[in-house]
Image (tube, rainbow, N blue to C red):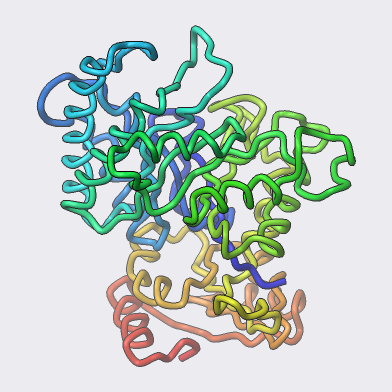
Length: 405
């Protein structure tokens, strides 16, 4: 199966259970991360850059893209839901300026920003109430979008919307003052939607995933990013990531090109994680990974999906530090190739036109094991004595279009 969508994972760099390394994210197969920039300091400048800078840099250096949420945890003093518009207008001015400062600071290292999160939430609680009225959120979105675009080329995502009611989006657009939905894409959280008509059961949940995404796409006329998808029912959770990703991949790859699983660990929100709090992998991890390790295949709009492909995996030495991945970043970004340190993951991908493993400093045992698992594999061997030599090799390959040496 060729993969056409991009798989991401929700993390939390300020939560010890939700703060995986770039290597762990690569082993999962995710190519995007999503997290909130949390900074409730009241001063004119953000104070939490040191908390996030190293993570953004680490992800960027190994080709993992970042979707950063800017919302009610990014600037203090959010007014009450029903506060008068002049009160909200003051907050919006300050919030938009903070968005500008953050986007300016990160430049092209952050590929996308999400404005707010779940503004259309329908069941507010004393512990969680992210709601924003349409007449408030429209001007907020316009101000934040303009502030970011003034200093950054990053994609701006509105939402993620969780109510399942696309008419909220129409009312937000009407409230902007110019009738424009100020966003490049729309984030949606399709909780409770069946990946397919009969799974987990014909009467399970509140609807069909594909139907909901099509309604949002028809309303917005913009790409839909599924910025959260997940489930707390552990009787079906184990298969859910793969089934949901497959449904999107086969039916809605052009309308919904990005999907982010929620979340990394039960230590963030239990029991939604791919890991338990003690670090044990749950069945949903394997479901996610099995799908995500398939290589991305580009599609031409209006043409059928490409089904024949040559798969490729870059196998780094066990225990390779982030600097080894960083040395290969131009090559990895150019070819968007799956990479990691697992012999099993490297060998189990099977493209219809063949499979190549680019092995960096492989041991004889690794070569023998790979050939046992996949006798038809083509091994592309790279010997590099140090990080600098690897960077020279990979840069040369990328510059001269020598994917396999």
